[in-house]
Length: 108
Image 1 (cartoon, helix red, strand yellow):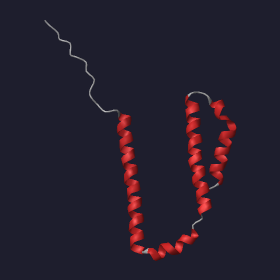
Image 2 (image 1 turned 180 degrees about the vertical axis):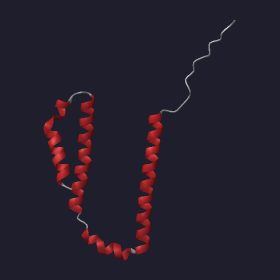
Image 3 (image 1 turned 135 degrees about the vertical axis):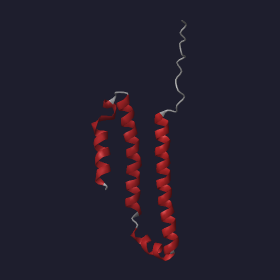
Image 4 (image 1 turned 45 degrees about the vertical axis):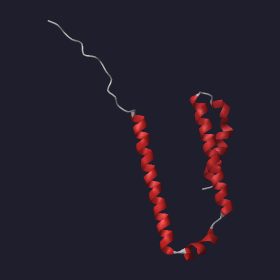
């Protein structure tokens, strides 16, 4: 009696993390496309008069400050996650965490 060993081959499947990332990015793209579509539709239907009245309510310095803090906090968060990955938490220090947290929560 002869027995044959079946070859062990791995199934050719895509990486689940890559598939999940693509699905997530696709859902984000659809969400923001819908937001922009609603914005442009609302702006086209209401006309320029309504939008000209509300322009005076914008607080440019306040929103610019919030945007700057948001962008800079993402830099410190990325730096902290890289240091944590390398187990070098002391390089970031507690002061960086404190400033990042207080600035981020104080401007809401």
